Length: 161
Image (tube, rainbow, N blue to C red; front, side, top):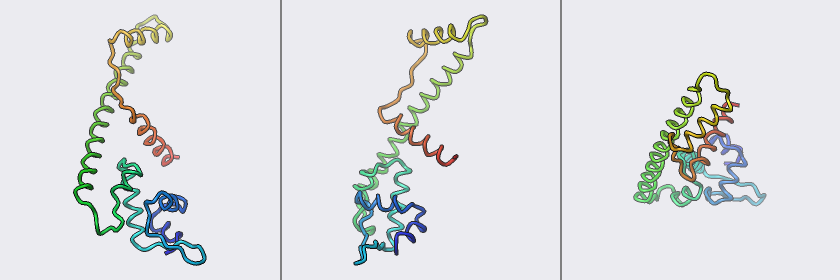
């Protein structure tokens, strides 16, 4: 099938399909003498696997390491281990996000508990002072969490807009 049909079947843009081919994830591409790419029917399945894995948080390098050259020859133990590691990563992220949420809720409550008679600047100094003296806990974010959250936020913004 040609790229237009593959794009229609997979729901991916032509450029995304070409990108996956260029980074070595889509390997079953043939070139005709006229330069057109042709794709076998299983290319749809491969693209669906790639898209699903990316949505689950797998990097392209992780996907490349897991995708077999032939869809009938999966390395079962490596796949199961990678899936278990990803579940552990997600659980750890969820725990850190729960801590961050609790911190932000506490911060909102602290800001809203502004004593009567003080202005916003004085309230900000009061809240910052409490934070500096350890009276309010900081969120426990790991190095890649902000990047992951940024991607999720961009996806939501694109879907909403």
